[in-house]
Length: 295
Ligand SMILES: NC(=O)c1ccc[n+]([C@@H]2O[C@H](COP(=O)([O-])OP(=O)(O)OC[C@H]3O[C@@H](n4cnc5c(N)ncnc54)[C@H](OP(=O)(O)O)[C@@H]3O)[C@@H](O)[C@H]2O)c1
Image (cartoon, rainbow, N blue to C red; front, side, top):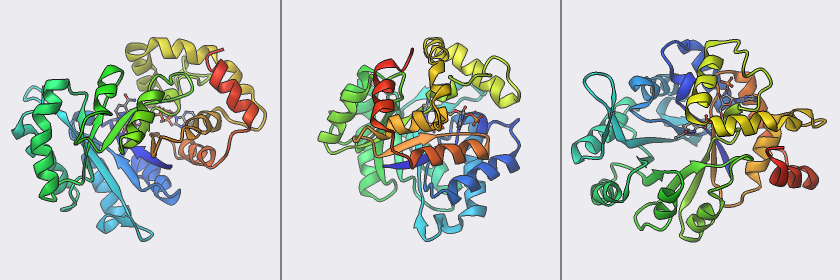
């Protein structure tokens, strides 16, 4: 299992200073992270551009310390002429996204192209072209990021090599689908390992713009998890175990997962996550997290 970094969210936002974003990325690379996830439609098109610029400086030639990087992108949404996101799984949109990525990353093809939350028709409509692009060597692997029933379909679909979905101590609903994916020979990428930091003590008193952004996202997109996370205050009081270590340790116990994607705007947070990723959870804490995550 390896740790990966998601180039999205606050890290990619225009208001987050690019040199600070690069510092976070430098931390990722020095901590041995070589797997990066992004999309052409994240952060108004800034996320993959920012990632490409930073990697060009920090990991020229797509490698660092002799290790080749893996960079993924996504299709299924594009930025429309008025700046809004448009759902689009058309051949034109897929080819555009692949070309955009390859150009941005100095001629390196996307290692994984994820279908972003397709329905069954969109999935089966897109797969033949993605398989041709893969056979022609223009993309590395075909992935799908999903949630709920869509993931259950994706893990049983021939032609999908990689699946991506959330998994953390407050939401293990994809556990069975991950197992099936593994049985079917697919790679499993888990996201939101920290439950997006919703358990943070000061979450309702944001200190920075990135904190305001994170709180707004939690309130709008996932108030249920925010409530559960705030109820799980005990994870902030486990001796010798910062909550980020507990959260990462919990995800690491799932043997079906190949890559755990996190993100951050603070180098010291990423350091803490990387430290936590290297620790094994004591059995009794693991049991507590499994049973009483939200208490
Ligand atoms: N979740 C989704 O909906 C989704 C969908 C598709 C793809 N993805 C991919 O998955 C990646 C992971 O994103 P995620 O937001 O789901 O990940 P996550 O790792 O669960 O949460 C990241 C959040 O946790 C905070 N954090 C990081 N380290 C911390 C620490 N040591 N202590 C306290 N808080 C900490 C970060 O805030 P700071 O900036 O303050 O560190 C950030 O807001 C994305 O970047 C993207 O590539 C996610």
